[in-house]
Length: 201
Image 1 (cartoon, rainbow, N blue to C red):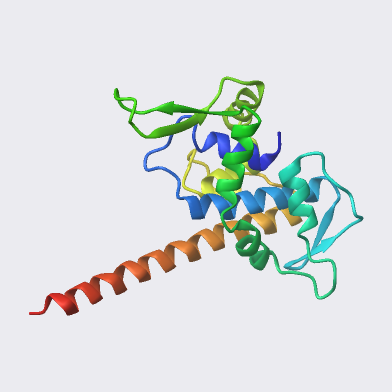
Image 2: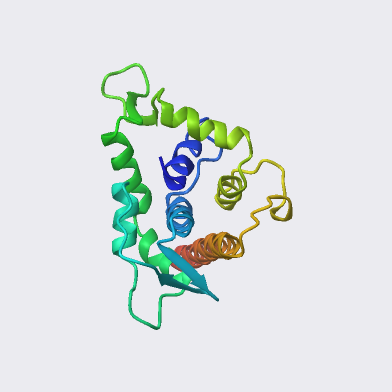
């Protein structure tokens, strides 16, 4: 299991209220992938840019796909740009991948068989590992979970990320999620103004 998969699982187990937004989660998953690629030595960070290492292929298919999408020609991609590009619909890709691996199961909600499906973590070693990282407040996972609104009451300063490159990535995730929220708020205001215009005095 990767940090991104662990992050996906803890956003569903137990299911937070309000639920984590798909866009927020996608950005955080892209950041989690980058953290794992840093840990594997597949990339380094130079300022705010991602510098690829050797053409290593991670064992995990989704992480391997992330490595394949790295920009390998200078000027290298900015972390923020990577988060937005790689993060597009990434939560759906992780859901599909985890379902395929048996880490997620579909359960009917409601008594009728026509009720909508609800996805939840299966009782697997992967789920227990993700829960253990969460319960131990593993710094990287805690910081990424905080970015999507799962707060354990600790500040970023207390997270103790240690590694400068990882700290840079996590900070970029927080900034991107805040930017996405600002876009949402702006659209809500614009839509309300448009509705009022048509409603008239």
